[in-house]
View 1 (cartoon, helix red, strand yellow):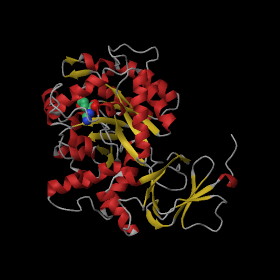
View 2: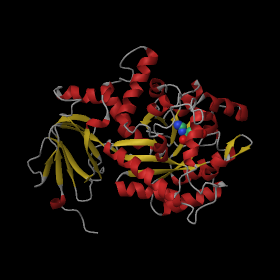
View 3: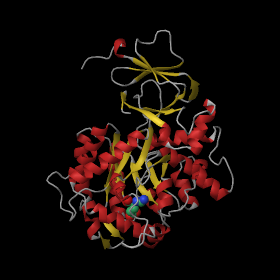
View 4: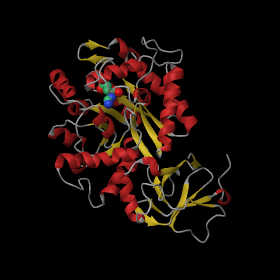
Length: 438
Ligand SMILES: N=CN[C@@H](CCC(=O)O)C(=O)O
């Protein structure tokens, strides 16, 4: 492979943007032939390369990082809001509707729905997604000729769309304590930790970005959790799991273990390596759970959590405990991390009857942007992403200051208008690894 030279370099300029930790006017980013940022500056340097793309009146941001997705669930968008065919009026009855689709998809359909979903993510400024992937085998649980067939369909969809993916390979074993997997859950199950890890070994050996994802304490017994935690530690992998999304999950955990789900994950060793665990949802927590999650990550998915009636994530408490926040589009009923971020703040305003709930040293908009970028990158174990700094890939998105939602606002106010009253619709430029994707 030939080295990138100065001649391969191109520059990008915008009106305003976030470079590293600094909000600057006329942000300039220089990118080499491999798509890696080689320098940043406020304003075009005198020695800039010949080609500098001026993005004009746009706000330049790092690419957004979506830390929790079930791509196939896009297929039921809008399909679970009426009584009639079943009763989708609770989380658990919604899950039955979701399982009907989960049981119906073959490899081609998994590829097609995932591709559609990821294309939508890319349009919305998402440059990396953590796919919490649990459709593994044929609907009756029989492995395909290639046991990683459906994981490969996800990887193929991501590659063709041009989005980065971290495959959070799900381990699933049972319907609950003492209950084997339901027929509709059989395709999620590998049958043993060894068979599951053999699949993971292959994916890792092929160079794919992989994390371990014990689905939940309901679906994974403690012995298996302990083995998964040991493997993750040995190989430096992140661990993601659904944690305390619904009160019933806590009740079942107490009945089986006498402990909360977070305590069970901690006792199994899943939290042993600082920063490596991501609790998805983490809504119904006890005080001790917050202490245990300190230094780890929580992935909030506010549009899905609202849709499913889960509850409001205690985001300020997570921040007070030093728990990193990330965002996920989860069910993909909505694919818009700007809305996810905004609702994180707005749900807390409704609960607290107060404003500026997630403000810290930085204004709320900056906090939300950080959660949507570096927060997700940290949760996915990809610290090189989420920031526009030298040495990082040029993964970026830009919002149009002349979009109808932002037009005629002062530029610095437009940034707050996007994150606190807007949507991703204003984002109209997206780059992944230096390649323009939108
Ligand atoms: N937002 C929740 N999604 C979960 C629900 C299933 C469960 O908790 O059993 C999911 O797709 O795996």
